[in-house]
Image 1 (cartoon, helix red, strand yellow):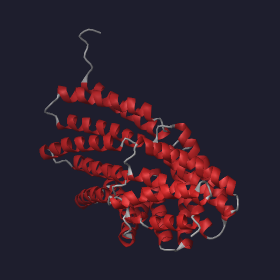
Image 2 (image 1 turned 90 degrees about the horizontal axis):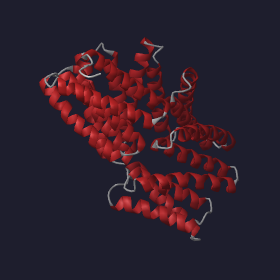
Image 3 (image 1 turned 60 degrees about the vertical axis):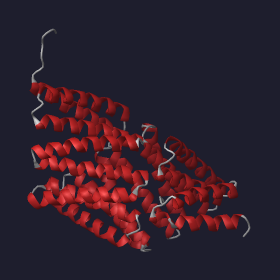
Image 4 (image 1 turned 180 degrees about the vertical axis):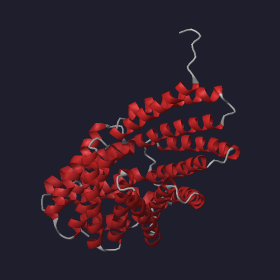
Length: 404
């Protein structure tokens, strides 16, 4: 209608509604719909900010909306694009904090560093991820120190400890990683005890339990790892039963089951491991089919197919293992083709080529390809510390394949 102007409070409610729609679409795995909602949210926020240029809160709304778009880009695998958007928003956010140093704006800054940390970690830049996570942790600790009774800031601190722990583990600093995971689990359990119906806090506990299990496995304590993973899976099953449409919780369940299967495989229970790996694969396939554009879900699918291959190979089903490894490599190769300089994608493809080689599928060619990919990463100084043992693993398998 000509001359009609929407009241500002109505515009604000509209912006919030778009954010809610985008978040719901992210939860069910529809990245395209989420992007559409967040882009509309950004346009609405930018219009309000232009109408009220002196209101800092309106500028912050724009930052929030753009960060949501960056989240979608990250989920789609556009890591460089996501980092660029987060960093652009961060510059604006720092200007906002200079004008009005509100704690919630400072909290946004911690979130921004954690997000770029995630992106760098996914790309294989472990050192860069650790640096960003440390900044995010420092900011979260500052907020808890100043507002110790606010559960939201304490939860943020726990998440930051967990993220830093993951980067340290990837860098092979297991002792330091353990300390971060201990801190994260202590915070999550304390908060959950005070708010037992908060499902997000329950989910935080599963993340920490899985991380503790990972450390236990890396230090050859398979029994403890199995216990941690079993606790995590138990909680995840309850979460999924409560909200079957929550794709994040479904993904957590699949990852937890796969980790539990790893411990069974290590204990010599190949049949039990195979059953669990197949359950995890079914969850991964469901999510991958739900949104083929989600790069992380596609990666989970490749990972699960390789794990099924491992269990089949251990039970003597070489043909079944080869088929599973080929399916896993097809996904890994497609992801690498879409982002050929991504360290994580290179590692995934190299691992799949290694698996194909040990399954007897053109072993020399596949193992040489894996060796060359790892060798280039090492020569370029981009091979993460946690993956350095892969070089020897592949070279040993190659020597055996050549009859050495």
